[in-house]
Amino acid sequence: MEIKYIKNQNPGKMPDEDSLGFGKYFTDHMFIMDYSTEKGWHDARIVPFENLSIHPACTALHYGSEIFEGLKAYRRADGEVQLFRPMENIRRMNNSAERLCLPEIPEDMAFEALTAFVRSEKDWTPHKKGTSLYLRPFMFGNDETLGVHAVHKATFVIIASPVGSYYKEGINPVKIMIEADDVRAVRGGTGYAKCGGNYAASNRAGKKAEEKGYAQVLWLDGVERKYIEEVGAMNVMFKIAGKIVTPMLSGSILPGVTRKSCIEVLKKAGYTVEERLLSVEELGNALKDGTLEEAWGCGTAAVVSPIGELCYKDVKYTINDGMIGTVTQKLYDTLTGIQWGEIEDTFGWTCIVK
Ligand SMILES: *Cc1c(COP(=O)(O)O)cnc(C)c1O
Image (cartoon, rainbow, N blue to C red; front, top):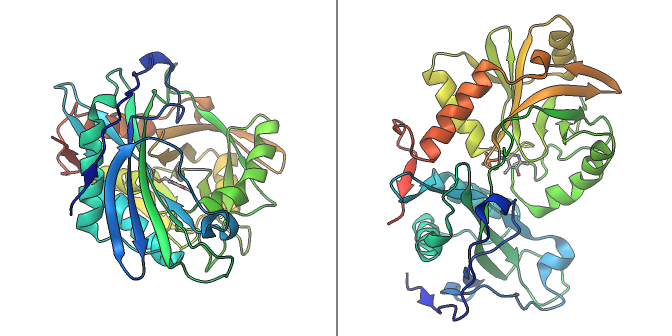
């Protein structure tokens, strides 16, 4: 694939690495590629970061044809920059595209786009512990008509943002509220696709939880409102009576790369991992009889995020005395160790971008 390169003549400067936060700053360039049914994917280019110009009738603005991905480039101690399981994100993006009738991108083409872009923006990968270069590939329907149909034109973009450590003051367990009213996804819906619309639908519950002092929402299934699904932007796992239990991929939860990696690390360490239905009642019983030993969310942003308190229908339950548990800590250490190249990657998950 030919990628045109237009250099930014007014390059920016890396902000103070202690004040990066999340998604506030962007690098000098972005990757763009266009699609039309006639031409397929074409005009791949890396250009100066700037506002996009879109038609006011653009499909994405009216009918929500938008999908995205999130992954990170990590600075290793030897100065190299590496990605963590990028093919997982590429495959998931194509699954999301299929669901929303957006065009898929051949895997080798998507990988080339991603690595060429990371190579171009590599110097923006921060060095401080826990920091990274967050990569946000996204695709949207770009037909210039108000007619409702599968898209004929689409745009694929990758932007990058240097981000700070998720845990500035050490790993703090979060408080999570189980949402009993709103649902995030339904059977046959878009729950397994990483699409903007899922987030739009979840904002109201998120806002309500926040007002009550909770960090995020734990979703129940949309049909019976009985089974645990996932947390805001993370999958969720529990240690119940020595075993690890996590909701199975039913089609309504997002198949997280971190979730998959946690399961593989746990199995290798000899834990029993059950991917199955977990009802809120079973979880409540485990909370009451003390067999719920640990709970954590897992996703690219936080890696793992211990849950110290769960609230369901105004009853509060403390987990593991509100402290991070040993399995949660071990997972965090193993995954971050591999991602930042501090421990040997025996899984073959990382790839250095030269
Ligand atoms: C992205 C995302 C996750 C986590 O996926 P990772 O690949 O581990 O980052 C979980 N749930 C939702 C809803 C998400 O959008």
